[in-house]
Image 1 (tube, helix red, strand yellow):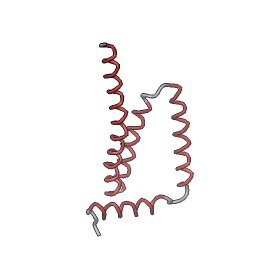
Image 2 (cartoon, rainbow, N blue to C red):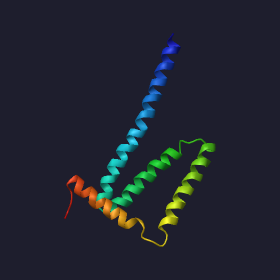
Image 3 (cartoon, rainbow, N blue to C red):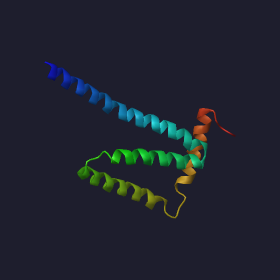
Length: 110
């Protein structure tokens, strides 16, 4: 009976952890969005924070799965690089998004 109770307890802890991760990631994105609205330096800080979290997660991935992760990472970052190469594709979008965020949160400087 104790083994069943221990297994149930372990499953409950695993379920809580699985639910907690996406919530933490969502809150991190909300927090970093505030940094995006304040300045371009906020963009760099946000990128550094998100990279740090990504690298920490990668460190917990099994060697076999890590190869798939790295392949997907290279593919995604390559697409972004290709879209932005030689253009300032994202700048107008980011400036507009920052302006809207500032107005929405009442931090507009206009």
